Length: 478
Image (cartoon, rainbow, N blue to C red; front, top):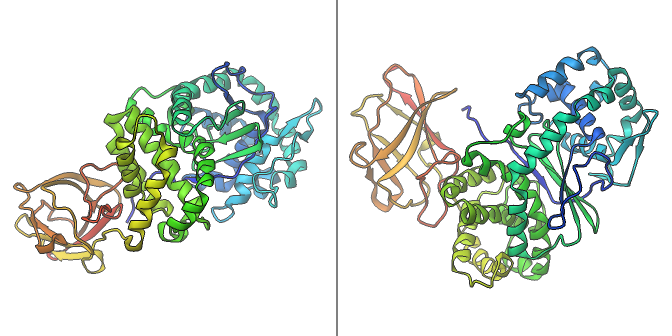
């Protein structure tokens, strides 16, 4: 079944960056050490990756639908047969090489002769060194394509993007919140956000030394298009990628302070799947905590957007391999609401870890039990749809569902107890309802708990029904 999901974000908590780039925005003011850069060689690496077959064909790796992308494709068309583009065409399985090529470029600068020189010993993944391996080809590509002339001619665009990114991301608001909740871990440090509009699905954060941390995020769609979001809902959603990297600098050292308690009370293997790509309990806890901290931030600053975003985050985290984000974040929100005025998120670790120890022996999420996720019925208004679940749900008289085919959403239903003859089964492990189904269709999909849905279906054990749960409806009359 085809469906549109948020990009799968690869969020790393290793560190590195270059603190001496000549392409930085003006020095930050005394009350913030957050800077934004649009570096020359980093942009070159992103353009090269965008021109490769992988960059052109993968749906999420490179952002494509914005005017600057079309301009780049046209300008660099004369060098589309350059051998570098074959060498640097990676794949989803080769993601470390892809990220190494892109991010390690930040450590390089051109000299007056157009030769690349490494400015420090930053490597995103030290054993890989994908950018270093291609230096001769990269220099030749830059010369043949006249890349440096292109970069210089677009300085006004880059500086405007820096300005828009600062406005879109509400950087000062984020930093003030994190300092208040965790302490000033970045006091007297430089925090640099390194941007290119081509970065889309994968982002990371690196620390070069004790004084400088770099964040390599995906910018908001509106920023990539040359502006800022006008709708507050979009602005809040766009904060996610920058916030959940920035707060690693606050969450990770706090988790280390509670290292013994985390080891004793949080079994990372129970809270993640293989898709997560993590092996340690601390790293798993940090990922839950960074995203849950974002939930608290949104609930505190943008309460009207909080509930919908909470379900979006749960859906995204589930698909990343962290299946119990909703109850984890919900517990943190409840603890935060009950905390003393003098307490911050850093003080809630003991209570949160006590809760994880209590619930993790029975961790599970309700799923649709109906055999093979399919149901053979007649597509008539009089025919009930009976759906059963692996665990009891909290009975609700109103929730949402989608009617979909393989390609698109046909209808969004607000299930109402009276209108749709909703009847909960004994034990609340299922329900029956009557819904309008187009008689001319051979099959349809009934979907619950997709990203952002509200109201949603939740289990009696506090766990939400698995994200994007659906049942295939087959028309017995076709």
